[in-house]
Length: 379
Image (cartoon, rainbow, N blue to C red):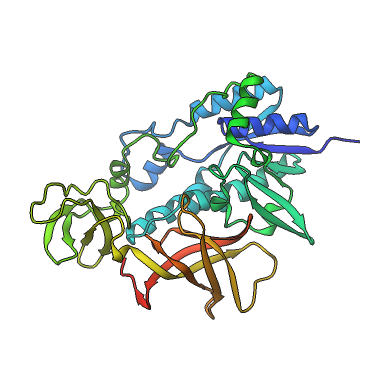
């Protein structure tokens, strides 16, 4: 019997490295595929606006780490450029959403359009029977459809970022590290002397890297300073540009030491794009920050059939947020009406809402708008 071939998305991190190792131990024929998603020089040519810092994403270092892992494991490593696809399907959307004053999640789009779409097309050309990734998630087949399950490690579970995947994209997909705690993954890497065993986890967005977020956005979006208005109507400061702020944000407001107000932290509670005003209020539980209803657009429903009537399940409106009990109802335009059992803080347009039935991720979509007691939150 010929071994089944698995193409692993080998990123140069410890999770994908252990993913490849585990698949070898399970008897698969394993090859790696390194994805190059960003090219500062090419993107500068498109913009006609030179980015003075062309080394913001250490992709070459990651590639060399991936190559070291492949050599250590004795597997072949392919390398492929997905730069144009990433620009077209992820980065332009990211910029457009910020221009609208919304807060997008590029990782979800990268999974949907790159890692589980064009990646699979390229990997199929290498004869892949299966596709594997270092995500903390699991799958199982139930009644002829694939279910996406949370990873065993609740602190590392990444189904939130996989919520836009389809049945087709989940077919023949393997998540070996989803069955493990992160500490176990590190232990396996160290015990087997995998070169990335002690490499720090990557954080943030690849195309920004270690660079200051505000400096990066200035290359792509015109910024206009404007007034910061307290919830009592007084102008108490100046913001650097609405795109730099998100609902519920505390840091970076520069509002300390205002004698006429209580000594409480300030938070972003809203934006007015037309008048270029940033609204703020005091206290982490400011009433304007809460919502009890939301409309979700661009919904991806992972089960083959959509529910009818009202579905009771749980939801996350941010990655690190605890599950909230909700009731879902389809609207005629294909959006989801979501009613929360308890008030939820900082339900922000542009971010993702993801739905669960226990450990099963049902899918998700983009928050279009939020309401509190029937009144729309003007975020």
